[in-house]
Length: 227
Image (cartoon, rainbow, N blue to C red; front, side):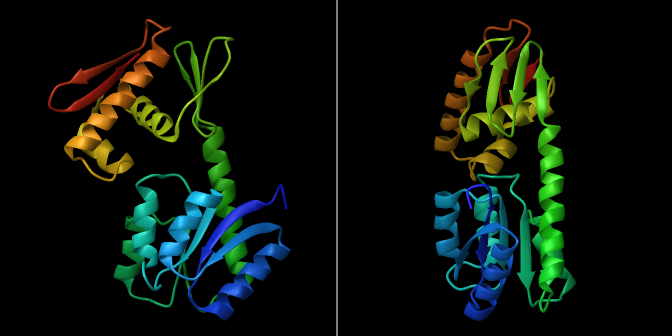
């Protein structure tokens, strides 16, 4: 299953979890099944899945809380919630915290698979559009690489890539310091702010070959990428 798409499934009903796992594996998905949210978060870091299917009601850490934790470090991975809840506010909350789709129990496996494939196709199209020209640099956000003219590509860390992506999306505008700290670090406290300053310095060094690009500090507000 070397070429199989990695999927993380968090479901606390053993029978249902196994049925979903086996059904997806017959469609050539590589499925990691977890029975609670805490284990799912650990497995997320271990297996680097391409999509998450999360039951909302789980022991130790529920699906919404798990999604919030993952969204602090990864704002692109597709998330599908599974739930027996039908209240409108629950659906709204699921989308508000970063869910991409919401499937109410009971559901058919064919419907789940269609939704998974739709999300994966949408993500692939989005990633293809996120190869960005920045003056004489080519920034490949999905692969987290930065290339100056015809030189070798430089590999960025996860946070460097996401920070640069947000700077570029707000090019020539101020990127709010508190907003980006909460998005990428999960908090805007003093230590996280100092950490972000270090990442900004690293990005400046990587971009210094092009004199048309500058990252400036707008005191009291945030940073601005000028190009």
